[in-house]
Image 1 (tube, rainbow, N blue to C red):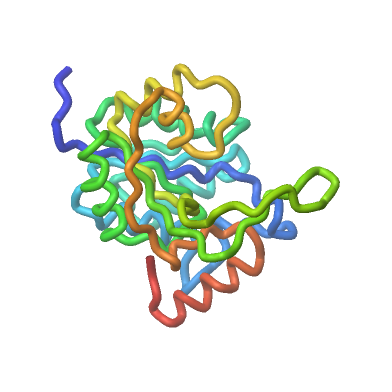
Image 2: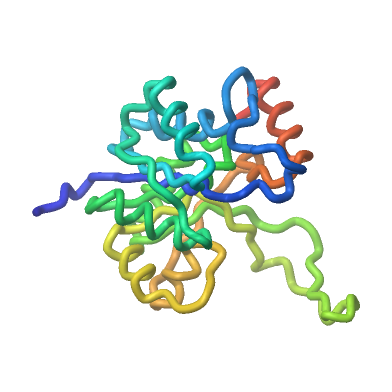
Length: 230
């Protein structure tokens, strides 16, 4: 089957366990009148360049996720699938559910302030090498700390960037990276880098926060109340 050269699929990786939220499920925490996950999905729903979406959830959240999608009318969501033990396993499951397309946008479900503009910037950046990630230059001084809790060295921050999502890849590149993956990787770009591909960096957003702790959630709530977004 031929693949539309402009077809775009998205994988929303949301199978985490909210372990640092003190028992609260961050994905379904109400922010600005709707679940946090609905904010994330909304950006992909209204982005004209995204054709279909796969939502990857933990077994505990599958039913709630399906209900959210149906209630909100997110008709671009082609599948809600089960995540794996690791994040990369969840993305691999999402790739299988997504089926062939030209481009894949991978995004953390817990980054609710993503915008259409950010998604589109990623798609444009990825055209050069077939892979691109959102990132921000690190402003703080970074220390490499030894196991004993003492500083081993101070890293030059001039070339250090903090990776975000969305991360955008040609479908065939990302599928190959996952099929050949050895060991664990904390993001998809790391798997692609190991195959020798160049990964472009495009400007992320300081508002594109990943909710990991209760403090992160409080910040997102405040930003949404102020009308701020990615």
